[in-house]
Image 1 (cartoon, one colour):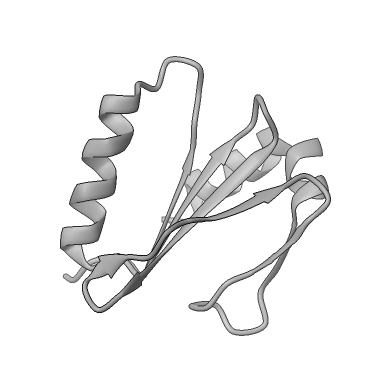
Image 2 (cartoon, rainbow, N blue to C red):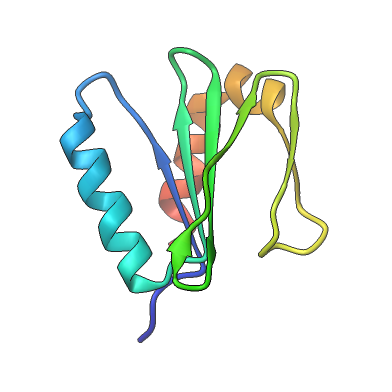
Length: 97
């Protein structure tokens, strides 16, 4: 079985920057095309997109923005809705494996 196209991570206060850096390197090496990082406490959203085997500089979005994925054609994520319902979204991400 190959790598997923997208990884979504919702950070908790206990997540460390070292863990985040390690995951970034693992996902980049594995060829994960999009790596989404959700920071619920400050309502920000980072998206790394793979290009030529390396992640491009991240795109930073904030509450109020609308995110469109390069991997999910037609997918729109309204960040206000996501942040206002973060527990529901987290549950959906966990069960969608």
